View 1 (tube, rainbow, N blue to C red):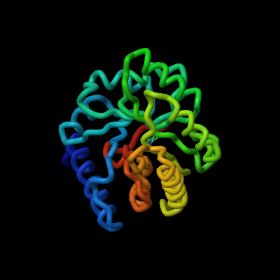
View 2: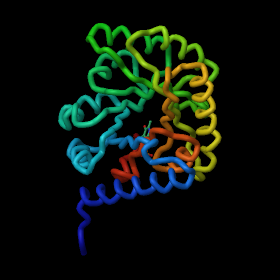
View 3: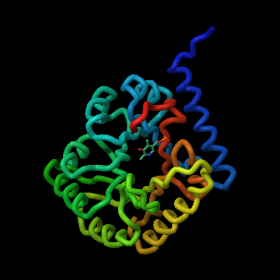
View 4: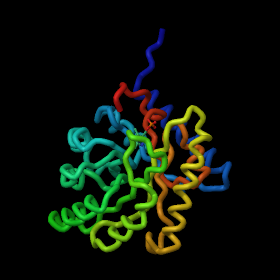
Length: 240
Ligand SMILES: *Cc1c(COP(=O)(O)O)cnc(C)c1O
């Protein structure tokens, strides 16, 4: 019997995910350069993250500030771009600001104002962030309703240090990922509307959407950032 070296299987899975992104982009006439792969390392130890960075990963994502606070210093903050993809509570905003390069989960004007104030306090010139839009209206999910989006965008635009770079969503889980397509499509429409109104300046605006189960569909609908954990690191323990 042979034992599979876990590091080796991560290498194989990471390569397979990149190959699938290539295929998915090619199939819909896009370039794989347009899709950033964010490896979601929640629940996995710093050693696995370091291994993935050695394999070429540049973008890592965590969903909890407390966990990130333990792991990011072990991995080295400057060794990757760190993305916060989970809900951010107001009382953890300062700690998040110290850890993360990009925040995907802005969901209120209060949080926007707080983050901007904190940037001024700590002397951070710019914090790129995405607004998380709740399109599925599930009780367990966070994000703002699309009706509230214009007002939040307006708030962010009045603040000098935080910079809106795109939208993020987390659709409901469906056995068939095709069923997530309307959610991805809707997020793209919202992004396109905002872009027309100049919400992202000269840029088109990022679309952070697609996870292990549905990233190919998300890429077909225009994802520019996919957030993939399980397909790279393997299964997590329950509760995440
Ligand atoms: C855990 C998580 C992911 C990755 O999920 P997988 O199904 O393991 O790829 C992506 N986005 C968010 C917000 C997450 O919390």
